[in-house]
Image (tube, rainbow, N blue to C red):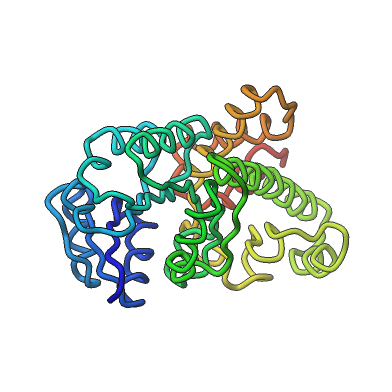
Length: 297
């Protein structure tokens, strides 16, 4: 018999992830505080519970996908751990600060539950296509139990270490991404000023030392990479507000750990200005528009 999975948080990421579990044959018991999200999940085959605590009743695994660390801790402190059967595995796929992730592990351990922090990379497109990368932190035993389930939602499942290690890997990765997208955007704006075509720069940089994911997969100008958001009015695969969130998490972690991340700090400032200007719902690659605006005519 297929395992029963509780899924708490059925938003832009959680909904397609839960849908892929339904497709894989799992019984999914879902819950979201937004009624429209519950209705959408019901449409893809999830059974909707009256509350998060009701969702975990009878579940073998409980997955959460929430906006921030405070909400994750509120969920774990809400009675959900006590409502679950002994030995339930709790997997939090939210992107949150390392300290909150470790605190969530502590709450689960106190309730004698196994737990993982397992944030994802790949955006809404990756969630829909089941090609996400999962970065997991927790025990070897919890990871081994979770991996077969995560493989129905992602292509790459990596055990990064103990409690909080998944979140650490996620914020380090996204700090690289935020910085590199700004660098790619600056290069294209400079190329425009110098009379160099987008395609010419792409053809050179994508096969030279400037090659990076922000260029070859998510190129911030229309044309060279047809699937990039630049070809769709910067409709988000990964919104600028979410990039800012991750960059701010990286800076909180850097300050706590005593790490010098000057480029990460400056990238956070650039995205903060962009989001404050009302562009938070645009894809993060739209930062090239801010670079153009800041450039002299």
